[in-house]
Image 1: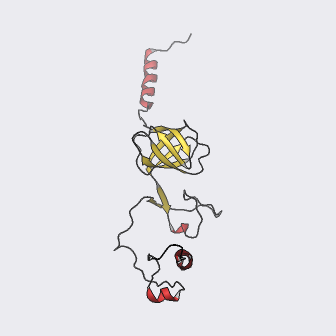
Image 2 (image 1 turned 30 degrees about the vertical axis):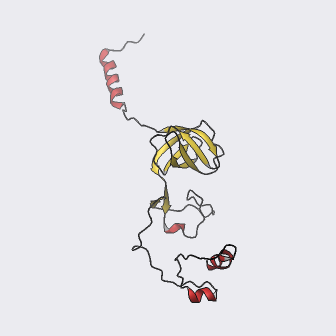
Image 3 (image 1 turned 45 degrees about the vertical axis):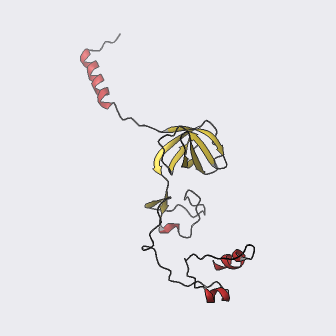
Length: 185
């Protein structure tokens, strides 16, 4: 039998104590109560924020939108076919953001801003909150380009600028949308 001296044992214990990591990570988790039509009802995510991203055990992502006292409603960002009742959900602590850059111009992306056009990844360095406030009226670009609808009666009576919203008033079923609104753009 091999015997160790007391000073060797205390030295080994001291090394182990120095290497011991006391960091505690708190994870906010919940359980799926119901899934259907792209929405999941989750119980147990008490400290989740409105618009926060949540991760499902199956790898899917969702956005917490409907915060109620007993459960929350999460909009699924993906198909959600693998999500089952009773599976676990983890809060990420991040509010839903989308990457922004000039690289997105002319590209086709899915709801998670991932390119689906087969032309490779898009490099970005900035992101913006999905639910952000619109810029004030002063900071917006003014209407500077006229828009011709192609209908002489409208173009002569109502000056419309590109980027400007215009209310089209008229009776139902008279062709306002088909004749005017869809032809403008």
